[in-house]
Each structure stands twice: as C-alpha cells, then as structure tokens.
Amino acid sequence: MTDATLWAIVLLSGAATYIWRALGVAIAGKVSPDSETFRLFACIAYAMLAGLIARMVVLPEGILAESPLSFRLIAVGLSVAVFFAAKRNLPLGVAVGLATFALLTTLWG
Amino acid sequence: MSLFAESPRGPVAHGAADATGMPALVLFASMIGYGSMAREAGLTLWTSIASTGLVWGLPGQIAMVELYALGAPVIAVMVAASAANARFLPMVLSVMPLFNETPTRRGWHYAVAQFMSLNPWAAMMRDGPRMNPAYRTPYFAGFAGVCITAALIGTAAGFLMAGALPRHVTLSLVFLNPLFFTLVFVSTRDRGQILAVLAGIAAGPLFHLVSADWGLILTGAVAGTGAYFIDRQIRRRDD
Image (tube, rainbow over all chains, first blue to last red; front, top):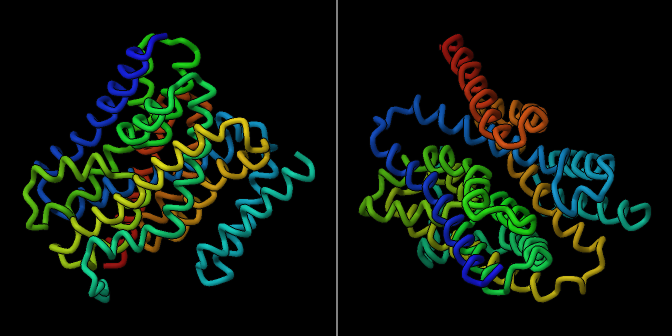
C-alpha cells in the first residue's frame, strides 16, 4: 500500500476515535449535572476499563500472548498483594510485578 | 475531604510534575512496544508517531495496526480502531462534570477530550473533585502534555529499536501497561467504583470470549450498570 493510504488510515482512525470523545462532551453538556447520572457513567467507565485491563492480562493479543497465562497471573497477583501490604505503594507494586514477570519469562519463557 | 494541595509553581507545572514518574514511564514503555509493532506491520516512522498523537488510545492503535497488516480495507480498519476505543465515551462523560464547573469556555472541552487518556483520567477522577475548579483545566493540560510527549518519544524509540531489543525485554515492557493499570484500578476508594472494577475484571475476559468486537461495550453496560444499582441499593439502605 502507498504512503497516502497509510496516512488516510491514521487520520480516519483518529477521527473515528474522536467521535466518542466529542459525543462525551456534547452529552455531558446536555445531561443535568445531578450526581446520580454521572455516578452511573463513572461506574460504566470503571467497569469497561477494568474489563479491558483484565482482558489484556488473561486473553492478550500480540506479543503478550507468547507468555504463559500462569506467569501473567502470578506476576499480577504478587504485585497486587505487595501493593496493598506496603500501604498502596505503587512503584513498589509495579517493580515487584515486573521483576516477577521478567524473571519467569527469562528463566522459563 | 481535604482540599487538593496546590503547588506554588502553578497548576500546569503541578500536573506535569505529577505525570512525570510512573505514568510517563509506563506510557513510554508500552509505546516502545507499540512502535516496534507498528514497524513490523509496515507503518512508516511518521505514520507511527502520528497514530499515537491522533488516535491516542492504545487498544484502537493496536486494532488499526493489526488490521492494516492483514490488508483490510480502510473503512474496516477505521471502524475497528473506533470500536476498540469506545471506552472514551463513558470516560469523557464521567470526567466532564469536573470541567463543566470550570471558568474555561466550553469549546476548550473538545480539546480536553482529545487529550483524555487513562492516566490523566484516573488522576482527574481521583483528585479533580478536591481541586479548585479554576485549577483543573491547566492541571490536566500539564498532566496530559507530559503523557503525550512520553508516548510520542516512546513510539519513535520503539520504531527505531524494533528488532534490536531481545524478545523477553519487549515482552516485559508490554506487560508493564496492564500491570500498572491493574494497581491504579484496584486502588479506587469509592464503593461504587470498587464494585464496578471487580465486576469489570470478572466480565471483561468472559464477554471477550462471547464477542471480541462487542465484549468491551457489553462489559461496561452490564458490569457497570449492575455495580451502580448495587451501590445505590446499599446507599439507600444506609440512609
């Protein structure tokens, strides 16, 4: 394919993603700002994003699919446990999870 | 709730400082993975960089690159990229009341929406309500500015280094993204949001098996709405 096709794909994908964003601004301006409606929107957003991340861990696409599911689950599980044990220490939780995953994939991947 | 402690250096620098560190690092790393993936799929350096800046949502970018590599028609690529990024609708919807209270003109909110992504969204949902309304838009601008800069540099670096990094290093870099956001999401403190996160974790992979195209939207609709009503029931009982 030509360079022009590539640019068309990138621009159109950007524009098509922007539709969701613009729709969000437009609807949020119309809905009365009572907290109940927006609590519902927040729950939907949190559920969708948590579902997306869980899917990336359990059923990944691309290169992550090359790693065994057990490695991913052990690394995430350990990371969450350390995170809460260390009073929600985010860098520590990430470091432990990443080190676990790197170690497992380097040794047995 | 205590008020958000403002920085003497101003809201833009404050947002930028808060994004510098974990959020920027994780974005940089996952965009290295994306950049090398884009190169393998046949994108050029500049279209790779432009796709990060213009689409600005990794699931949509990955869908775009994968379908392009398969030789799918332009329209099909566009629809898939958009569907994979449908999460921006509930994200923008839920964060927008924070911006509607600001003195910024409403036209600017359409710019805010373009720069919305997971990191600044999570930061605004967590800290935004405690911020002085006038502080929010510039704080967001600083935060999102650092995020997009890190992502653009990461995309370029990933493209240029494609093939040079050992496979297990790339693997760990890509794993950083879901790992980091798992922690961001399990640390939510609001009961309704905790319920939504737990329901989403259970429903996400399940609904993905039912339909790869609609799984995510279904997850939001079913798990999110369910969590909301359970939380409302508990609130009413407590009143």
